[in-house]
Image (cartoon, rainbow, N blue to C red):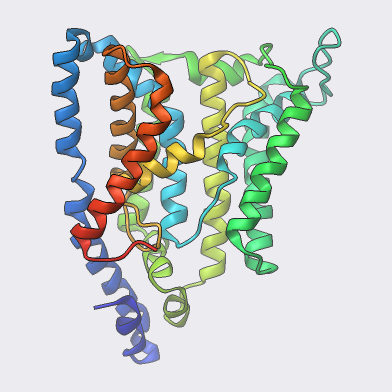
Length: 347
């Protein structure tokens, strides 16, 4: 039974409970799809061990997990947006431009190579970066929800504009003199495991709990399934979608902090091309491009699958130039499998 049927056949006073029941039914059948990549991950583990015994070593697996942290945060952000029936292409620019703006506001000019303003103390680097991310999401939300502009075009334009701002402020070079507060999470280890892994695990646990248990989280499925029906049921669609757009940009900015801290610099091209990997991970993880379906666990397994494929290929001596081809092939195969598994057409 569709979300539209459930919500429109109820009297106004019972519409909200009907929406909640619809969300529960929508989430339930998707559990099998969430687990669909687990066998693939196990097979990749077996192949990796056959290719190289070093695959199953703690150092290699922790390395794969740490390399997945930034991409996984973008996938987490994209999962929320896609479930709500929206799309945000500007995330791959936000992961680069937010750290650049924060560093530009904090660091003074450095020997003529980098022109910073030096307006704020170093401890404000992380809050400023997250604030920039929130501002980007708020502006995107205003253009899409208030001015009713096409979301795809708005975020595509934002991607291009923010990329240009990133290159201009960084003067086309990497910024290596980062504040210590900016690099801590990317370099620190807690209990022998990189702090970034712990932080990402916590954020995914929170994200999954929000979608499963909180009213506003469950409302995202109703919005993505049928926004008008959700609005009829009393869901404040525009407000929730606006919050999601802000949240996903903040997560992208935070991913930029982890990435910059891990590598000790902010590159002028940081994040370039990442959006394709993000969509590859979310799509093969079972998140629907049509909205209303998916989970953060599925997105996480999608990220791990892509990273394990790259790791196995590296250990096998396959040139990294094939990675982009493989990501595209994985998306197409996942769409075909999804089409026949669900009986629904991908549009």
